[in-house]
Amino acid sequence: MTYQVLYRKWRPKTFSDVSGQDHIVRALQNEIRDGRPAHAYLFIGSRGTGKTSCAKILAKAVNCLSPENGDPCNACDNCRGIDDGSILDVVEIDAASNNGVDSIRDLREAVNFTPAVAKYRVYIIDEVHMLSDGAFNALLKTLEEPPPHVIFILATTEAHKLPATILSRCQRFDFSRIAPEDIAARLQTVAKGEQFTLTDDAAMLLSRLADGAMRDALSLTDQCLSRSRDITVEVVAAATGLAGREHLYRLSEAVRLHDSGAALALIDTLYTASQDMTRLCTEWLQFYRELMLCKSVGRPQDIIVSTADELARLQREAAQYDLPAVLYAMNTLQEACRKLQSGADRRLETEMAALRLCNPTLDSSTEALLQRIDALENAVRRLSSGLPTTAPAAASSPAPAPSAPAPEAPSVPTPEAPSTPAPAAPEAVPMPEPPAEAPEVPAAPTAEQPFAAWREVLERLRVSCPPIFGVLNTSEAVLTDTHVIIETANPLFRTLVRADNNKRALVEAIAEVTGRRLRIGVRSPQVAAPTPQETKSEDPLEAMLRAGEQQGIPVHRQ
Image (cartoon, rainbow, N blue to C red; front, top):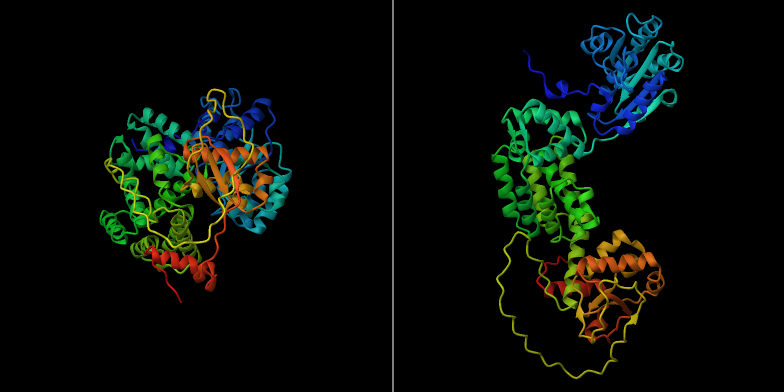
């Protein structure tokens, strides 16, 4: 017996078999059950989302001799005849190859004949957007007022190419991309029916690679079955030429550590193992997208398709990046993917992208310059707070063993300077009452410490509360045991923070970063008297560059 591929063998036979299109299935079943089918339907959606399958099910349902709650019975003569093609009253037309006006004129003549066996003559026109302008004009009148025994079902992936006159004469149904969870559940059903094993992680990986298309997921499963009847993540990666997730983490580590040699060596290893460079670049870009979501979304698990362990590792990796660095990496890889599609040397283009990511000074684009300025600003900000300017250690590095605290650095005597007034006491801003189960206990005031993670709080506010982020973008903050004291000269902050939503967003952002629910204080920053050297050169960019040079950061002056 000839083998039939999975996507054909497991094509849905009834509306209840269609995955991920419940809103469309329900509407079509109601029309069939009530005996009021429309004369023209338009199915719109990306590939593999069920347009043609629903069209064939609809053709059977309107002609079924004993429909069951809007579904075809698949047992009567009409259902079996439509399935095996022996009933010629259901006609499928490929508009990509029959797009001329003569083909539509022949169709207009054929619709006048009554059905030979079935109740309706059903015309399924696939890729209808490929019809010429003359063909659309020839179809228009027939589509508007067809004979009562004719039903048209038009399917397309590009609705914007259809004339408005065609759109207005059809019932329109938009097919959405199928959710990864629905695809994974369907794959498990197929695995049980075909008697092969499919792990949950492998099913989720296949659904991610399918990008919302059930047909693509089943085709990839067929490809995996050619290697093994026990499909695991490793089998999927080997069958599809997919770079493993571990390789992506190692590439990310090389980028963070500016280790271009390690990145190029890893790309060479992948290339030698016959990994497809276009797929690697695409997966690398997707990896940085997931890091972006981890840094920008409160609940990334609602968007990122991954296991709990993988999501936790992604979040740890995202914590090692600033958001501008992630966006720069995405722009660089997106440009590399575009060049790969145009026929560039795949290995060479991937290596060039890796070099730019590891050393942004090689890139003269605006995004690279902005990233370098952002890194320099962060170094100066940490320097002014008394913190080291080195980047945090990689998440994959082993944690150092506990050791005794380092001895304090000896104080350096400084020359006498005019006394400056003590910092003003912070102005307390009324905040929401703490939870009843954790009453706040008054504590004695403690020494202030620089709030090293203040920029991370601001990045969260960029998403959750843009107004507060706008007024605090250039602010600094210090910590005590009970307060976060914000130093800002922007008078709008005191007005905006009194709004309940803004106040709550600020408290929640601080709590997510520190793990504590702290009170908020605000004061104007103290401006020290300028030194004679600063008086001579008041250019802030020059001061920032000089501070970067003192910390060993390479600066290119023109």
